[in-house]
Length: 103
Image (cartoon, rainbow, N blue to C red; front, side, top):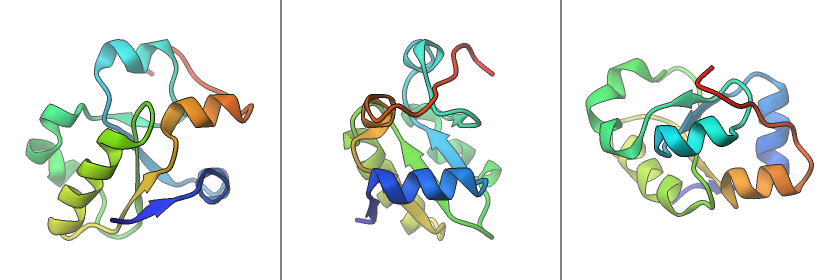
């Protein structure tokens, strides 16, 4: 599977990376990477057409486990996808900003 270290993801995020958060809505509203699109794991396969195929997709969850498995699904569907190592928890621990709510 493709997994990127947090520092590489942070650099991509600064450049406007497309981020998909595969957690459940209750987790997402509590804190997420700014600009992330919520697509719960259970909906990802049916929402694949919403995701870009012309640029990388960074997949994030709480700790990196769910995002790894969902990255595999995206790769099999023809997307250039990367799982964010450590997930949102590592992002917040490193002092990066988080957003709250559904936006």
